[in-house]
Image 1: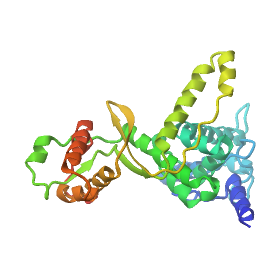
Image 2 (image 1 turned 60 degrees about the vertical axis):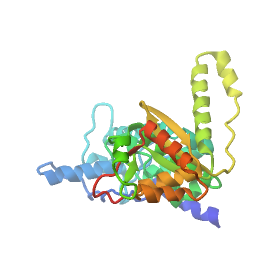
Image 3 (image 1 turned 180 degrees about the vertical axis):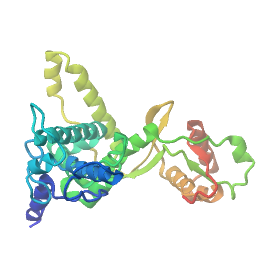
Image 4 (image 1 turned 180 degrees about the horizontal axis):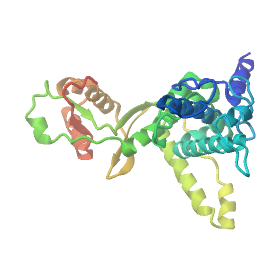
Length: 329
């Protein structure tokens, strides 16, 4: 019964009947001329809705529009033919460019998730994701921002590997945030010393992400990237290429609760494992608790010397910054 329910969903995704989130419905027809700003907006909305529709299984433009009309008829309303291409063919070029560029970007940004699912399952997943959540940003950097939530909402695309896929997706999105996330002035030892612990509030740099994971995906993703680098380097010679084809897949991680901070230092990405008590202290600080209370999150078994060592490392890494006044986070 479950498989029978999934088939219509996939058929709808392929035919472009899935409603994209965040896009206004297109006008029924293209404006006859661009006489006003509203006419331009209508044309842009129509073009956007056409471009984000998934390609056919042959990587072509969908032959039918959402109202059942031939797409060739719709295209002719606002695109002229030239001496080589029809309006449909010209529109198809843009549709293909949109999808090929986004699919390439998702492949590059999610090597770990692609390794978990395999290329075919990963591509189907990303097609479904981008059909539901088309790009809404001027930068491709944000393309994966809603992928983890999509995996939670629609586990059929990753089952039976959904739990692992979600952890990998969270970790890979944290890398994107660490790479170019904002940086705030670092909290100094002098600022800490002159503020009473019960009043001192601090937070983590915006580029630091704390992750409580059910799988050690930090090591897994690193291993996948290293394998991919070896494949790229070895592809220059036939002998090396044959050797690469014999490489085994990176072993999937077994379940293990780990605590990781994804961050950057000197413009390079890093992943730091944390002890659970240290993770809880950082989490409490980032939630806005004053220093004195946040430290209690570590539990009774933690000694002051340990806490001092943690803060020494965190300050050296530049993780801690003063919480802005009025920031309720």
